[in-house]
Length: 370
Image (cartoon, rainbow, N blue to C red; front, top):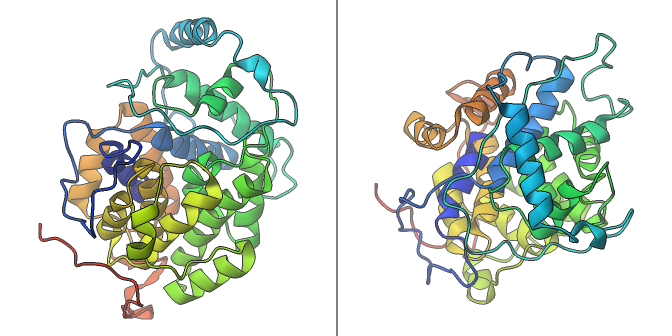
């Protein structure tokens, strides 16, 4: 999942409406003074947190900080005051696609880590589709993370959902479910399990079929990549299952690409960036080069690319970790230790099991020199 986190951080400095870098450019600084984690990272880590809690390995990882409960209450009060009346526009079973995230974001997300709940002794087997309360657990944890990091740049619809009491249902067809789905592909034991779990993660926030499909596509892509499938196999499976046309090269997509948060509009180009890549870094660069919602595009592309190519180089992982706070980093490290393959293992298989394949048509440019 570090590839997803890195993509978010790199893309954060370039996310704004109409922010295409121009031409086929992949030659831009990976890190700038504006590079930081956003809601993509927060909710990706929240998904990892939910999966770890299901397996009972997170106890003690995200330690409760002094005053965290008071900080959460203060954040909730401030947000409710600032967003008074917004929640009333969301009703059970209703919702629309979230608007594009605002170009201007707070320079530093607020943090107030919450304790991890104890895992009940009768917790059902990990990732069993019939696990009671799995969808509710995802929803509750997403709300918890929102109040830990209320200024991470969430879409207005998700923000309003978090401020609503209880657990209401949104039929959002935005890409918020897809951007956070990478950990599911690592934790699932089968492709069917990845699909089911992604749907559970979207049940309260992205119940529209396009929103759920986006999350399922990312989770399935990660699963297939770590299982050693070729890019052609991954593309074919995703196209058959979701109807995505992944044949268009980025050089054709880029000129007319606009800032849009719809899952059906953003997930296919993010997957195409992975398909045209040479490694995790190039997948992220290709995604960012499209412009628009660049942190989310790069988060999705980087997450799939890491599952395919193997763990990030230590230098890039250190750069990403240095931009997280301690609680986020602790959960990411715990999840990586549990589910990600060690260095030297590619796509969940031995490196010798899959030779490097030739890139298909549509690959634009070459990887810039370091």
